[in-house]
Image 1 (cartoon, rainbow, N blue to C red):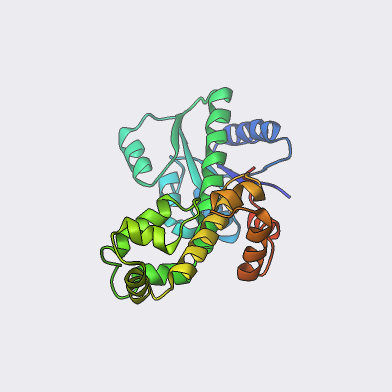
Image 2: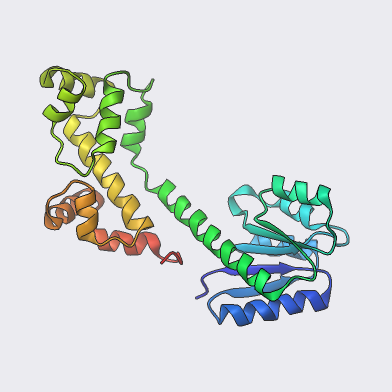
Length: 262
């Protein structure tokens, strides 16, 4: 299985095949390198399969490289590198507006092309991680923060304090003291505004942080447990399994399946 699919688009056969050979040598079988000889062929490929990185010429007959970019759906938009024989300022401006990573002038040096492609791989990995993280957001936390209206002071201040001290052994009394309220009154106020008890909010917030760390870092389960305020990995694993239906390790493997992030 390939980590990335890289599409090279150029109407000049020599330039297209030259970049393909260079990238195949660099990729050493890790990434899939495919080509298109014009903009229409490129669009057809982009519509039927996932392309992570698009390396395209600008000036091509019928459909230009920029027109290809304008027609790609936002949800499938790859990391884009423009290659052109013309130092055209207007083209460069439009390319930047469309979110192009880099604008290279022909003839492109081998070292320059490889350097830009490696940066594109990093950007693609980051985009994929962000998409995964968006999917693991706790709906109850989102609803709590957006319920009719955002939490008011002093609950808003309490939430900020919790986020800043998530790895500490925070109690309701600690947070109530920070916002200068009686613990009993603070508990009632918190539940009234957040639609979650203080204890449930703390657990869900810590689990959310744990999921983010499991996906986006190489931290061990013990390190993540500590970072999320749990004294022992055993208790953290038990609680995580109760809430998510699987162990932290299983969750990490499932969520990172297909991502070339480590």
